[in-house]
Length: 255
Image (tube, rainbow, N blue to C red; front, side):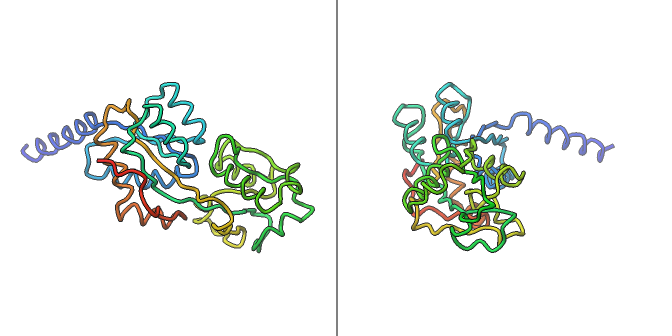
């Protein structure tokens, strides 16, 4: 009887903990979605919190926030949009932080041995996937890179614009595009290292991925704690394993 009572009370405690856990919604740029899920899982361990991750292009999430989406935290793939939200008084300026530096790769499952841009001269490549520069920071960096090295005239007619880097990868993996510019994080765990080339970071502006706590958050403290957790050794290990670099410095300190 005592054992039954204890088990029953323990079950009630677990259920009540989940029911009364603070629910925070974390909006994440699509390139960082899988990494965010890992970090969120670590953050939620032994805490009375229920984090929910939603993902999309940074541009679309930004628009949703402006339209009143009930997000608590925004992990963008750039710095511009989080800064805009602080300037428009929609996010806490002192929560602004750069949480990762992204890396660009040129990827194709059909063409092994990619070691430079020469592969783009292959006549079999008729479609090149790229995230929409107007919506996705990775797309903007890619376009900037293409223009900087004078490649635009030869590839412009072959570019296929995706909503975000996740969709850009899908265009390639589905066969609709022969090759694409995506994030290293999307392929680093796949067994096809010979199928992508990491573009030297000196060839494009650093992809500084920044985050903010939104002022409409009902759980400001927990949201701030989550941003601090991203800078923890546990999170930095995940970042490194998933193909990101740790930021050189934070934009804002938070508290």
